[in-house]
Image 1 (cartoon, rainbow, N blue to C red):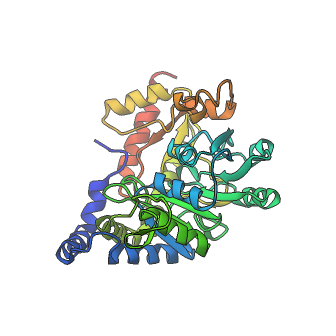
Image 2: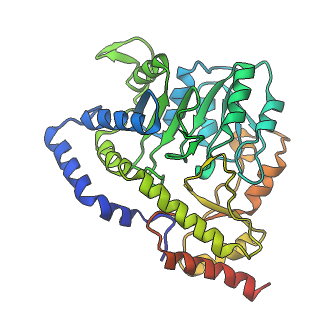
Image 3: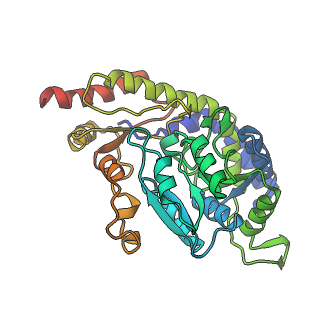
Length: 367
């Protein structure tokens, strides 16, 4: 069996360090916003090249609180992509704003900057690009749009920890950004967790207040806030993995490039790297009109595979009223043909060859 991501192999590598850190945390009984959370925030800020990194309870919370802190609210329009996990748009809805979905680039699967420009209205207050599957969006273009139209730029980095653009880490470019530490992420916890990054002192102060019940001083609450704090034990785990994140991401890139090499002669569209930044392959996502046949063959050999995302957000029931009749042809075509293969730094070359041989067999048996 080959899973989508081998968390057991990763745990074996960091087991001693993690268990020692967890035991020490339990012994110290400092569980909420303790020393490991503080240290992890400082280490993330240094790694990402930002002034502030604030741990929160999830990636969804990170995006939600970032929008709130940047003043996005009722009736505001936020332009984003429909080809992403629903959390991107949920966060926009949570603050009372309106997600405006635009189409994607057919090669990168990231939001199309030209489509952004066409969608701007007097109600537009922010753009939220998603660095999908670990490939940075075209941030130079998008940042220029934001400056021209005086819009907030909030990065969805939930799939891109360690990816960079022109030497800058994703999460360090916009006004604020949200990261997810869901277990399968490039930097994943053993449960939920998230991070907000910003270079604004004011935004950081607001995030810290919002995540802790609207309080700066215990039992004094200046605003209505939330209970959204990164757990101390998750911080122990994340600190161990953060030390190795470049190694992990380099391993993912090796796996992705070997996949692409071995699949190059087949009628399959392999992931495209646009060269604008460093792709860290949270997912290895390809396209084929024979997706169902390929996935059936992989599943028969107990090889993991998945479709991210089968139903774009503008076609989801949750958005059926505001998106009624909307067509995003590139998004819809990609969703109909895309699928993802196992990817993690612990996947061996032999396993990669085994997976690609199964795919090759689909075309050889039924050309």
